[in-house]
Length: 410
Ligand code: PSV
Ligand code: MN
Image (tube, rainbow, N blue to C red; front, side):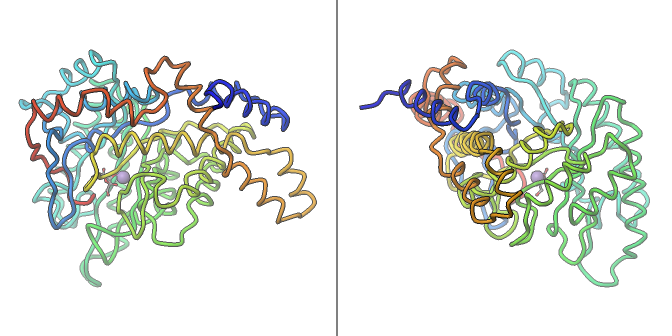
């Protein structure tokens, strides 16, 4: 049987023959990869109901403990993204959360304002026709910036959940003006070293119009706001058939790609485990990012997961997602770009595609496993590591049946 080291050396030789520096690729795979979503480790469900997981996180402390355990197994996820209404102490404080995260070897990453869970948001938040609601939302934005400052978070991830349900319900152009005014309030309140990421979504919770419905609208707003406003791409927020990697290439070229919410979709915002339904999509997205980086374009991208684990164990779903990102990223890094450039010049479309597929079909696990060994992980198999580690048993015994429901199929 060929052992791990031999498999790695074999792959290294194969790739070296194509001029690919495997050690450089391996270093990239050892760097922090993606922020963990605090809201994904608790119970979550669809609008029809929630299946309760024994031991699921209930408090913010549980969520940090779970993310720290995920980091123990993966070594490339030391940051937890937060949702401002959910990730605070019972008496409404944030600093103890930051301190506890640090004790557990974690940092707090992107802060997400919340302008969707409140009775006042019936007709929207910053786009609402009701002036008091808009003022209330702006005050929330100011709070968010203050909290971000306190937590030393440099990125604010804004999803504007506004829209209308019926033709004639509101003046669409007036809503666009309110949108800009509200976002500008947030942008102007931010410190010069903070970045605003603006997420788009085609529908839900409103269905006739959505105020930030696609990357074009997000990009329009960000461009008007300034350099520190960038587009946040949630993979689930696209209608079927949309070519996301093309959007990514465009945003990279415009230097307007700010970040990702990774997940996998089948129909819409299904929030499935990344890389399960369409692993090719995440590989092709990374191909565009690596291409841009190799071309010397500045890329300062904030990667996050945004998933909802309804039937699987949440922690395993998250660990598996990160493993799938590592696989996609590694494959994107080992594309034979010299051969590809040559075939493109010759307009040999078949061979162009073949080069892409050869990378996609390469077994990059020996490379990823080597990176895990060098990171000092106790196992090269993060899922097996989690199952053997005792955390699941511990949380089932100490937490009971977690009842928290965050969002409803968000
Ligand atoms: C909305 O569907 C969304 O993608 C936004 O990013 C929210 O912050 C998140 O889900 C959690 O509700
Ligand atoms: Mn999202």
